[in-house]
Length: 298
Image 1 (cartoon, rainbow, N blue to C red):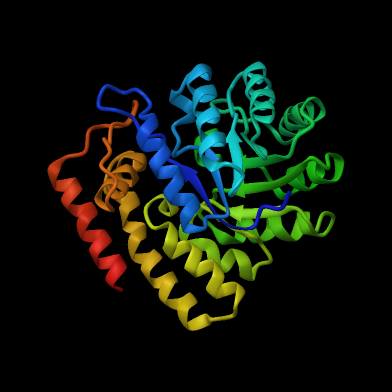
Image 2 (cartoon, one colour):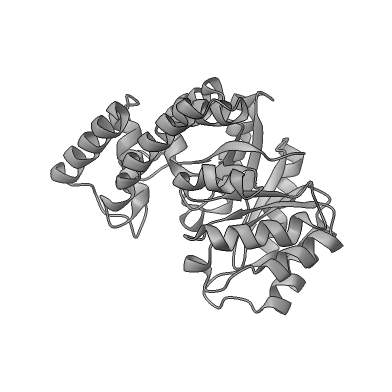
């Protein structure tokens, strides 16, 4: 399996009562696939993995596999502070027909380098399935350093890539240099939307980022333009995305604003988000609409 291009960490759409809205999830998934997104990650940070039960996750995994129907890649986030839960969901995702799993390091007490290598290695040994690491030190409390990632890549062929959500491209660049030297096939994608171009310039493979929920067609156009060396279109897309990055600052928890932007783009959904998300205000929603209008007209 090769992870390259533009990927969506799919939002988990909820009803006003806080339950998963399966009909609107189906619509949203189908839109992303039809737009040409290279793959979908369910239960990433934007998917509120931290607030969903194992049974809810299993139900949405089944729906995702059915709706996608082999039209694009499916990656399932199985991160948890309990390794038993990680393994349970990993095996379930494989049996259900997903293509890979995504695993964040155990959070709260961030692991040391040795602990991270041991943790991911233990999972890799017990799950005969492609694994994408997820590095988000701002949430986990510890970094998956180039040394850690390179060591895991050398030891475990089924660890095939990483999503690096670090707000400095130099971190990702060093990671790319370290791991590609021993595993040229190892995928490194950035978690920040505006890093697509610099990620690719550094030898990386693309982005797995939230705005693809909102404007998937723009990101697909961006990726295709870069691949075709159409740098005029590449620049136009980059400028639009730069403006749209303002959406992340509208609400205290950015998940709420991304859901609001999806709604503003035409899918009639609730912006309900589980704790610590707060209901969006009328003023905040107007700001979302204004940012979309400005960004897409750039």
